[in-house]
Length: 423
Image 1 (cartoon, one colour):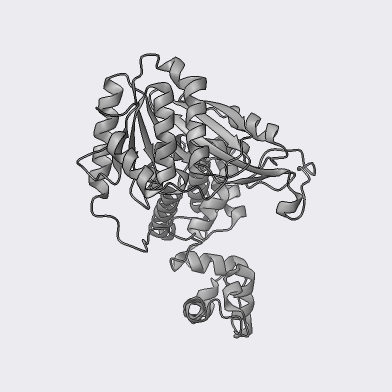
Image 2 (image 1 turned 45 degrees about the horizontal axis):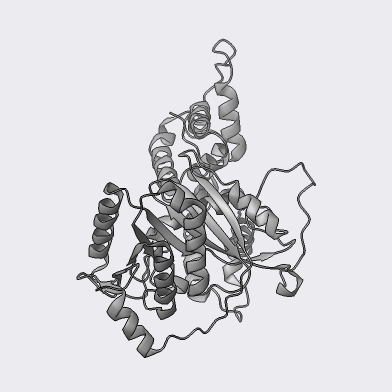
């Protein structure tokens, strides 16, 4: 079955590359030249677009060799040449056979890079020597005969790979109740959904400058007709900044994004939530009396924010809804559904497209869809939301006493704000 490199995640790509390298190391010594080409061509053709380069790198072979293998696979059986097979030991000698010290010299050069990488005073700027051309020049300077193609082959044989940073180190230990909080969130979500009550995930997306600026990613365009954008992203050149705040409805697979232009404050977060309820929520859940909200522990919807609770209480009262808040522990925001079920697809939809105006931002967000049926509504919020809002201790104590019920499990993360004062 064909595997697409375009959709293959990085860990799977690395595993696939290692598998091809391992199989090639085992099989190639026993194959003729033609059989090697056909073996490489078969692997590349199975991978589809990008497979030629991928297999060539994994096996340490020339790209032309892999392409020749694919071409031979495309011939009819009757057209395929028998060809001659060289006797063992025939053909050009490999560089490492003529210069046995070459692999060790290359490995030493790469290992030596670890001690001096990033030192601006290093005469040879060793962090740049990881390019194949620079490495081959360095080896030639040491008296070895080397080329970029040969260096690439030796590096792959010795286990070197181009790799991105692995974001796996935590600066601090995760909260000991992290997994238990995930379980509690799942229990509450299941209970609300079974009762037909709305369950949403909320968060603010990264701020974006609005103007003719470069946007990360690429899109199809005719050669030489790429969109022309400004060469610098100076905020003073922007029309303004877009502050997307997202609401994702878990049951309806429906997103709502309120795009503000002032400040990402608790008041803005609750205003975005209310816009969702008035626009979509109350119509989808006409019998809703309770609302479950999952959110991060920081930002404008922080678990410790007094202003957020104050504005939520006002929202709950206006719409006769008991609002239950469940916050994810610090450092776990990527598990919040709005991140990977809404924001990630918006980023894909507008990649490579300059966000030249607020109308463009709204159109690109609203045009976001997925194969699973996601629909997104975008709305502009031109309200003013000053920062630095303070809630006094007295007002907070009154709110806690009359409107807020803390849950038994982690009351700092889990609480319900009632629509009216408790008796």
